[in-house]
Length: 184
Length: 347
Image 1 (cartoon, rainbow over the protein chains, first blue to last red):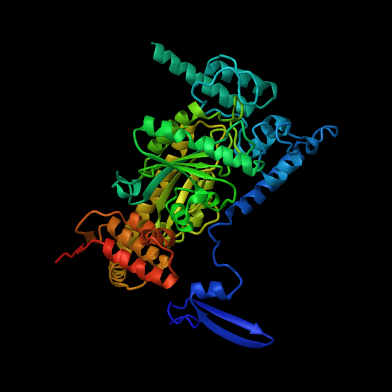
Image 2 (image 1 turned 60 degrees about the vertical axis):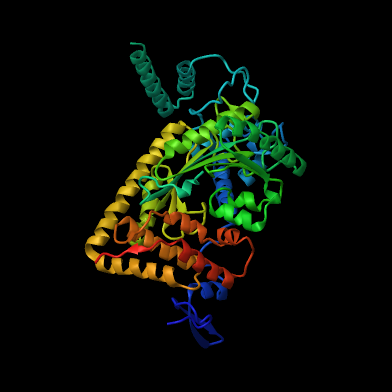
C-alpha cells in the first residue's frame, strides 16, 4: 500500500487521530509520518552534545555533593585562578575552562574522575621529551616509571585505597619481572 | 594516492574501518568553553602552522584550511566521510582543519578540544590507526605546548576524555545481528567492559544501513595500548557473533536472502531515482550478499565507498553544486548505476 500523503513510498505506519471525537486514519510512510507528527522517529544527526552534557553535569553534581565531608570546605566556592571558572559552573557545564582548572578543583576531582573513569591516575603516554615542569606547574622529578608507580602505591596505601594499591603492586611486579628478563 | 576507503582490506566483511582520536589542548589558551573569538582565531592560525612540519616529516601532502572558508556542501560531505565532526562543522567560532591527502589523518582545530588528531584506516587495524595518530601527536608536540599533568595526563575540556585523551573505535557492519534485533542486547553486554555501540555519526545518531560504531568509553587509568587491546578483544567477539549469525541466517533462509540480495542489486542497477536511506538499505543488503558470496562481481569494488558516495553531501560535492531533493535522488541513481560493476551470473 502506498502512503496516503506522498503516494510514492510504502506505507508502514497506521496513524490514527481522534480530534473532538472525530476519528481519522491515515496510512503513512516513515518519512511523511515524521513530517506530519510532532514526534521525531529518530534523533537528528546534529544535536547530540546537549544530551551528553546534561547527563554529565547530573553525574558531576552527584559526585560533588558526595564529596563534601567538612562543612567548612564548600566545593561550590572553589574558583579557578586561570580562567575564573567556578566549581559550580564546571558542574553545570560538565566542561573545564582551562588547563589550570584541574589544579584549582583538585580537591574535588579525585572522586569525580573515579566515578566517571574508574580511576583518577593517568598511566598512559607522556609527551616525548617532556622534562622539567609540567604545564600545571608541578615539578616533575627525573625518576623511572617504576619509582613513579611506587610513589603512587605509597599514596594509595596512605589513602587506604587498597584496590588501587593492589593494582599498582601488580603492575610494578610485572614491570620488575620484565626488567629482569630483559637484563638477563 | 588511494583514500583509505578505496583500498581493499582484511576483515572488511564486518569491520569497515578503525579509527583513533587523540584529544589535546594547548596550555596557553583557555579551553573551548572559555575561549574568546579572538583567541580562537589565534589558536587556529598557530595550530595550522604544524602543517609544514607534517608534510615534511610524513612525506605526504597535508592541507590546512579554515572551516569557515568551506561551503556547506563541503562541510556536510566531510562530516559524512568522518573527516570532521558535526560539532566542528557547525561551530560559529573560528575552527580549522589539517587533512592528509589520503584522508587518513585529520586534525580538527578548536573543536571541543583545541586539537583533535584523528587517524582512520580501513578494516580491522586499530594498532595502525593508533600508531599513525601517535606519530602525528609527537610531531605536533614539537611545536605545540600541549597541556599535560603528571597525575591527570593530557588535560581535556571534558573530564570524560582526560588522561590519554584517546577514543578508539571500529565501524562495524552488523546486518545479521541487527535483523535478529540483537543490537540492544549487545550494547548492554559490551557496556560491562567499558565499551559503547552507537550509530555511525556518534552519540545519539541513528544507524544507517546496519552500520555501527564500537568505541572505548574510559580514557584514564589504563594505557593507550591496554585500551586498544581491550576494545580489540570486544570487537573480535562482535565479529564472531555477527559471522555466526550470518551463517545461521543462511542455513535457514538462504533462498529468501539470495532473492533479496538480487532484488537489491536490481533496484540499485535500474532505479531512476532513489533516496539516500533507500540506497543505504539496499547497498547494505548487497554488501551482505557480496560478503557471503551469494553474489559475485566482474571486478573488485568497495561498497563502503559507494555508501559514502550516496550521502546527500558527498553526492552534491561530486555534482559540484547544491541541488533539490528530487534532482538529488535522480543524480544518486545515476551515480550508483555508473559505479556498480556487472554481476557474474552462474549458469
